[in-house]
Length: 107
Image (cartoon, rainbow, N blue to C red):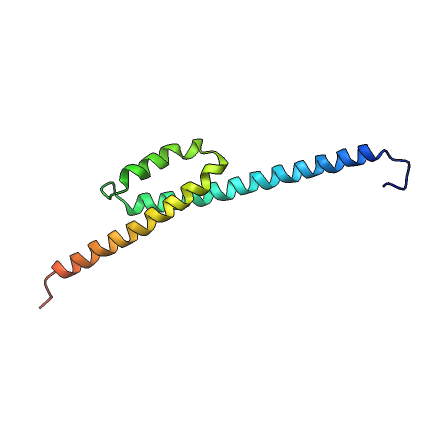
């Protein structure tokens, strides 16, 4: 490239353009992957919380905000929804254990 009588500035601009294209593609791919992951986890949590769990309002708020989230907000929301999921698992396990304790033995 440089051996020919090419203008070095022209070559630099081509590399910059290629780099910007790759960065944009990377950004779009990450945005899509993070959104899909968050959406799947949100659905899972909504199914585990029928509306009366401690995080029901937060889950509903996150559901409404989901389409408007900026890329940099996705990771924060992913962490938050994972924490909610862990609390729900513990809560639902405690309810199940309590129900099993309250069930009279079959005789």
